Length: 95
Image (cartoon, rainbow, N blue to C red; front, side, top):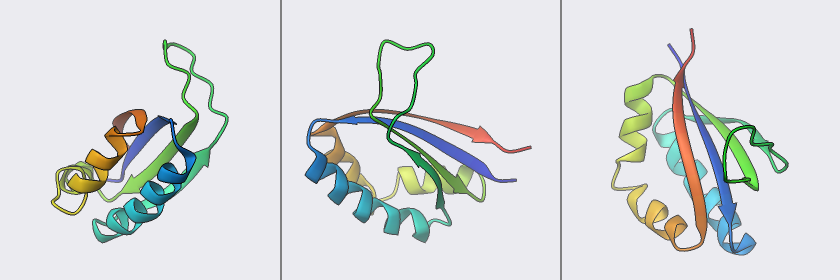
């Protein structure tokens, strides 16, 4: 069963965000993930945070997402993102 990772991001630096996305997508692919949608005008219905970008990634299952998120390959990219953006993510199983 597929699992979707839904991410919202508000970057302080567009150039760094572009670099982060480019480098992250290759790591996502190595863990069986693929981008489904990217929206630069998302609407937050119940949040104090109005994100600038929303992204949906599809993975084969939850374990694949967790393997990606906790991987040595993604760790430096995640740390880099923390220097210039506010983000949140949730996992949703497809049924």
